[in-house]
Length: 125
Image (cartoon, rainbow, N blue to C red; front, side, top):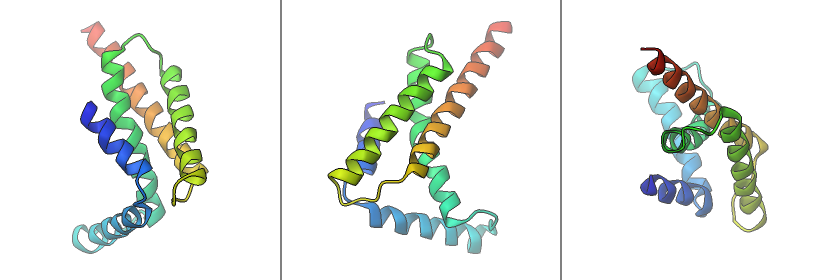
């Protein structure tokens, strides 16, 4: 978990916006030309990666704190994501985006729902 905090903090707080953009563009063209996946746009890849950025720690934290409900995780993700985007807009040479806030929050909510469903399924077994 600590490693993901360091990686996540680096991804959102370091002035590497251009490099991240180049990675997303590379991922798009790699998947299109090598794997034949062409139904997602570059912005779609960026959205999915932002979802993943918050989904992974949500899964890890939801396992550690099982009593927190899905909407608690959604609220925490929303607050953290807004904080990150405000920091990027105000203090960092990065572009802030409300679409990133949406993607981060959706990623956390979907991860929390999956964990909740998994718990309910394993309790019945």
